[in-house]
Length: 245
Image 1: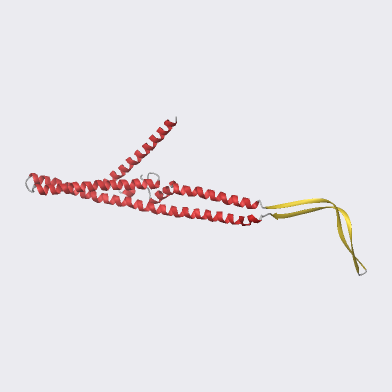
Image 2: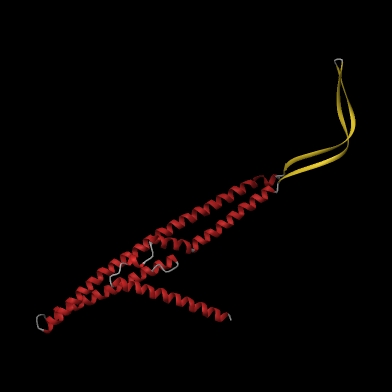
């Protein structure tokens, strides 16, 4: 059963990779035929957002943020256990001080009465070795803020990287267009030189020179196609999904 699951996962991954490769090849061939590369790609802002959504590093920071928030709650909860309320009621005989005044003379005595007394108060118990516990909450908040800043910085860098690689794709596409035009020109020159050589208008050296130039132009054209294909694949890898339409 385990081997069957692994085999199925491998075949699924292979299918996705082949599909991506075929899609990239189709985009390259369409570009050769004259299609504008920007029309074959998803919009730049959409590609950036896909990269943000799929970034393992940003997901790692999200997990750290959740842990940081839970840590702050735990520190607050530990602090609040030292704060509480107390109330009580006592019934019994109590001595009361009685002050009397009679014809300008004052006197005092005590009397005992039966009564119920109530009490209500707030207490805060902080052992001396835990006086600094409150700083743990501030430290946890500072650590959480640090993680958020790191995530924000990483997201900014990722968006910048997408811009750079997106422009690399556009650059490779422009190079391919130029190489394609150059190749077509050398193909025409080669056809003409072949006729001139057969008719004796040029010698073998001139024909060989034009032939070699056409071959070099074709090699440069194929290399530029490879560069465009690689640039798109790298962009796919950074984003974590297919960026072509």
